[in-house]
Image 1 (spheres, rainbow, N blue to C red):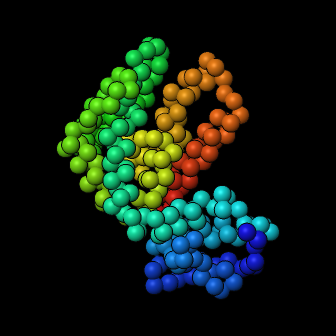
Image 2: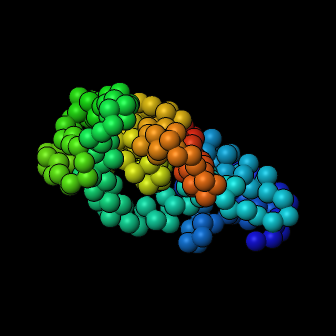
Amino acid sequence: MKKIYTHVAVAKTAEGFGIALDGRPLRTPGGRPLAVVHELLATAIAAEWAAQNEVILPETMPMTQLASTALDRVVPNRQAIIDQLVNYGGTDLLCYRAANPRDLTERQEDVWQPLVDWVSVDLGAELVVTSGVVPIAQPESSLAALRRIIEAYDDFRLAALQSAVAAMGSLILGLALTEGRIGADDAFRASQLDETYQIEFWGEDEEARLRREGLRKDVAAAAHFLELC
């Protein structure tokens, strides 16, 4: 998409803070006014648009994308998204451990178990841990506790959580990031623990490296979005 505006500004609106391109309000891909409650977030979104050159590159505007997701997807589909996130909790990455080799199982115990314990103690959701890939059922009371926590998030925090969980394959890691238990780098490394172990033995091809880098950027963007909110 070619850039056709010259001036970007944050404008106070009835919804909070919007973005104006040459005086015209910016809208989401779904046609909604791109307005947010937090001025810091609006300023960051405006900066992304101001930094564009002759051609607008959406992939360089993660704050814009997450805000648009909140307005276009989360608002009209909030309950379905919450259900999807709770389903991640039912099959969480951190609850499925390797049976061997020992050095991998020790890494999983050292990195993952403290977060599983945190969810149990601080969030009231005790989850069962198993070895292997055979599905196990998590306690309904624990899934209900996770649902209550997620339901308390506003639409913007929910959008960030959904993005982080999709990138990491773990609701536990997404909640730890959202609640400030861990930072983006630690969360991403935890999500990639198994892959990193395999890379140490077999190396990494360029396609896999690019995929991992894309996921890392998604987690970092979600963390920054949460800070601005």
